[in-house]
Length: 631
Image (cartoon, rainbow, N blue to C red; front, side, top):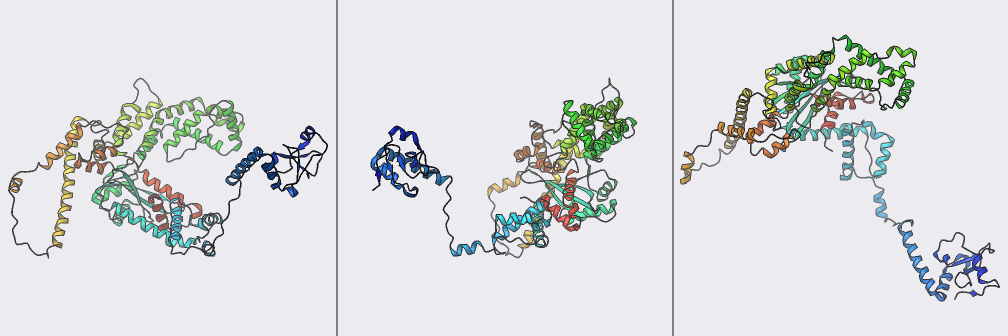
């Protein structure tokens, strides 16, 4: 029973005015109770409804709920609902979850490291090996405190092995696994192409790369970097030829199935392919680079303007004061806040970008250089500006073609003839009513390219690739050339069929030899009446079937220029089974040697200043894994 006493002599209004809430009270019950303002100790609890004093010793609220229950039923229901609601909210948001004490066995298991033969330990170790190989990080990373802390935080039961374990066991095993997968993938290729190049690492150690390209059964263009091999011998054509032969042999690749090898225009590489009697396609990017270099190398105006650009860019690159001044000038003149671009000697496109950026920022550059007496001699003259504008006008449109033809995940070789046609008829075609440096550069570039691509073997290869691309077919060939192409397509298609038939017959002969010990069936089988008619009827000649496919292929609507030719062939290969095999043979050829250069970029990311002591076999292994791993 709660203790209730009558209020003292104060009026109800006075009590109501002077009631104050409980200091630090968190219970909902205090919405119906309070204290006199004069009660600084807050010892006498007063009900706000009936103004009675209710005993609540030590802040206990049980008597207060009991008072409402016995005296004020409606207020008690409200207090109960409010208490339930507050309890549910706190349990879902701010309440500390109830902890469950682990059993002795569970606690012991949680503190026990994984056994090194367990699947969990092997899975984590493999994942770390994949991370090292795919992201090209130093093996030493696993011994750094930050990495070990991350691994321990993710799974405290995993004990990280040392770097020798990864370098001597995990990565070699991973390399063997991926090599076997690639070997199985390329073992039965009917046709493939390749790219190759030479490279020197940061430590000046020479390497030669080999990347092959093929179209798989799903009509997807695949690239596999087979090796980045140490090549310390003299880089003569004969030695390179022998090295490439050994590389193909090591991977079980038949030289006869090599359609073409795309390389740069180095004399030793050209000679190597001549010795091996392999078909060679010159890299379109290198040829375009050489054409541009030859078109401007003997022009004094171009040399002066180019030299001016290099000096200006160098001045701003090595002076933070001029960089800040250039930024301020850009804001003042409302110019884009772009940085100047440095030229790469082996990339003509970077030179054009450098000139284009200097022209864009000419006013800001002039303002900064004019303010410094020591750099005023670098101010570009109006003649320099005219030369830069002429060069960029002539060469800028060519950048997109180089970038587009450098891909390795889509068909590129069939684009070469259309691009050359476009250059001759539009982009580089000299304008008769105009003369000057721009027109001279266009003419020199065009003459060089036409001369280089006039080679009969190269023209024949590119014509076949363009014909087998459903986006182009006969668009870029003369009518008299069409019969020659049809004849070659028929001849090569027939040769592919005969090769397949020879392979099948050899397989059958082997099967017969294996079953020669089986008992001979003496009883002669009976012939049905239909079998006599079957013998008399003759199937259409192979040539007739090939001609029918060719006619059907040429009659079909040309595919859209933005479509994927391999997707077209995937859908139509059942209608053109013979020609589709030839399409796989030619459309896998890359137009540039960029895939091999990308392999060397990967090598440069691996052989860094902190990993300069890597052995050549480790470089080859790590580049192979980085290029061929599927994570």
